[in-house]
Image (cartoon, rainbow, N blue to C red; front, side):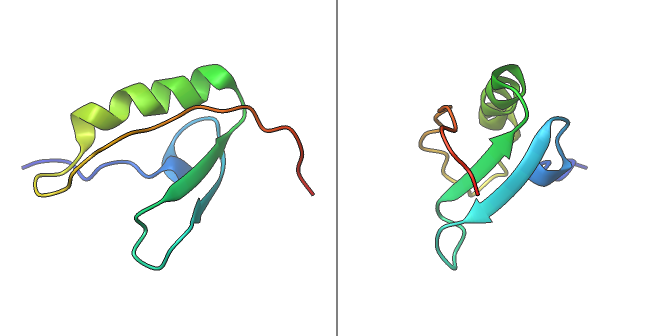
Length: 66
């Protein structure tokens, strides 16, 4: 049996996760370090469930937060 994919909020180093639409098509996840973000991004390709299309993941710097 296949394990469910970990969500960013359940991943070590994760700080926040927000869906940008109601279908969770676009998700922004914030990690405490660039290494943690890159690790999650690299893992995504291997854990995407069957029937889900993975197009892209980007790691960017957070320049401000409130």
